[in-house]
Image (cartoon, rainbow, N blue to C red; front, side):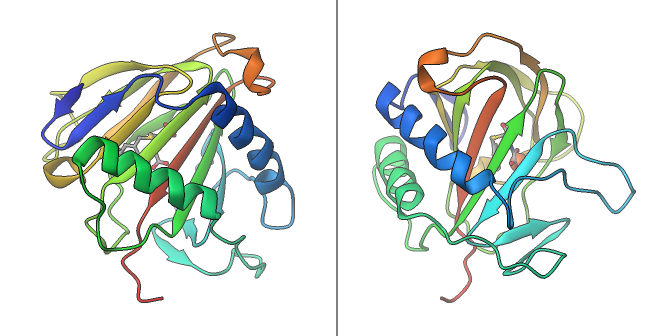
Length: 205
Ligand code: MD3
Ligand code: FE
């Protein structure tokens, strides 16, 4: 389903086995050092989601090889590169030249949300790939001009793929709410929603 030019929603793209594999991997990604944490915004506000970065660490508003406490970011897993390439090949019919090298893994508990924002800290125009596991959520897809309406609310389920390329790469988006206890326990995820976004930094290796 094309939500807007270059923005695609593919329900149930991940197999149950792949979701299980990602949940197991996410447990090791979440573990310290350089594990899952709440990011603090420059305003002093604390994000309600918990995040772990892989390959390059994001802290508002730039990427680095190190966390603020000096620990090195975990490596970018080959599994995520393979999934991102398969996703963009399925959705757009070809794979972009810039290698996928950033994984952002977000965990939402029942009350967590993510306000409308753009992801503009990457130099590459390669599509962003997003995979969802666990609880359903309302995903809000806005426009590229303003943080206000018009927007479209999409119900995302565990297993869904969304991809944002071309004119939608810099669109505003967010997650206004989670639908608690709607996930499939067979994935192994105990609760909440796991979202994995895969991006290309456009940095020279
Ligand atoms: C549209 N995460 O990590 S994924 C984020 O579900 C983020 O955790 C949300 O927004 C989540 O930055 C939404 C969907 C998504 C990710 C990146 C995008 C949509 C996007 C980049 C450009 C346009
Ligand atoms: Fe985002």
